[in-house]
Image 1 (spheres, chains in turn green, brown):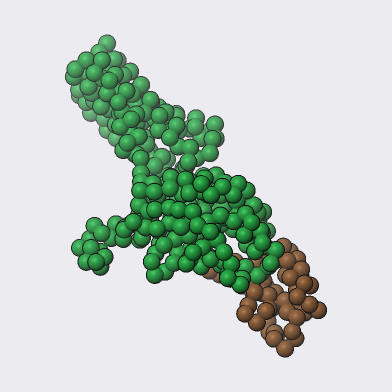
Image 2 (cartoon, chains in turn blue, green):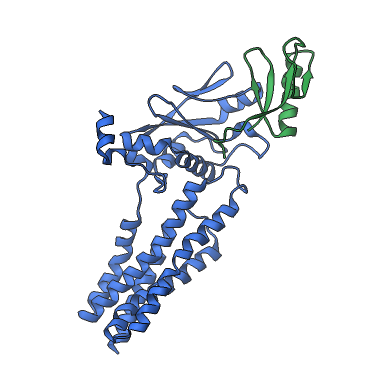
Length: 295
Length: 63
C-alpha cells in the first residue's frame, strides 16, 4: 500500500510541475493543442519514471531500475523532436526564429521533462521516508521551484532598452548612431518614417555586449517583435523586414520594425522581456583574459 | 535570414545612359518619377530591394 502512495504522490507532483511549466511557455510556443497534448503525455511518462525509481530500488528491482535509466534516455529525443518541428516551420513565417532560438527552445523542453522527473523522484522519496503529507508539500513546492530553475535571463536584465526615433539621412536609415540600411524608394522611406518604430539596446557589461553581437540573439528579437506587434509587409516587401543592427564601436544594438501596431511602449516592453538565448549567451567576464580586456 | 550578406544585383534603373553598362539588365527611364516607379515595379516583381547609389542610379538587389 505504501509503495502505491509513494508512486501516486510522485506522479502527481511530477505531472503538476510539467503542467505548470507548460503554462509558462507562451513566449516560446504558439497554442497548438496537439503540442500541448504531446508534452503533457511525455511529462506524465517522465513523472511515472521518476516516481517509481526509489520504490523499485528499495524492492531491489535492479533490472527495473536499469530499464528506467534506459527510458530516461528517450527524453533526449524531445530535443530533436522540437528542433525538427520548429526547423520545418522556418521559412513559413515573415521573420524566422533562427537556429539559436530553436535550439534554446528545444533544450528548454528537454530540461523541463527532467524537472518533472526530479519532482516525482523527490516527492515519492519524501513520501516513502517520512509521510505522504510531506511528500505532497514537496510536490506542491516543485512547480514553483521548477519555474525558478528553468527561468532564464531576460534581455532587460543584461541591457537597458529605450525607444529611439528612426530617421533618414538622404536614403540611409539611422536609429541614433546605428546605421540600419539604405532604402532606395521614396515611398518606402515615407512608410518607414510613419510606421517604423525602433529601440536602442545598450549592453550593461562586456558579457551583454558579446551576447548581443550574436546574430541568433538578434534574429530572435526580430522574431519576437514580429510575432507580438505584427508586420506591415508581405513576403515581397523586402524593405520592411525588421532589422537588428549593431554600432560597431560601442556594441549598442538597434531594432527597427515597421509594425502593424506601431506602439513604442509595447516594443520596449517586449524587447525587455525577450529571453537571453542560452545557446548564444557569452560570459567573457568569467575568464581572466576577458576581465583584463574589459578595463 | 535577415542577416545574410549575399546581395545580388538583379537590375539597374537609371536616367543617364553614360552612367551604367555591364552585366545586370539595365532599364533607362525619362525622368526621376518614372525611375522610382520602374524600380518599385521591379522590386515587387523580382522580390528584390531597391537601393539608391550616390550617382542616382537605382539598383535592385536580391538579399
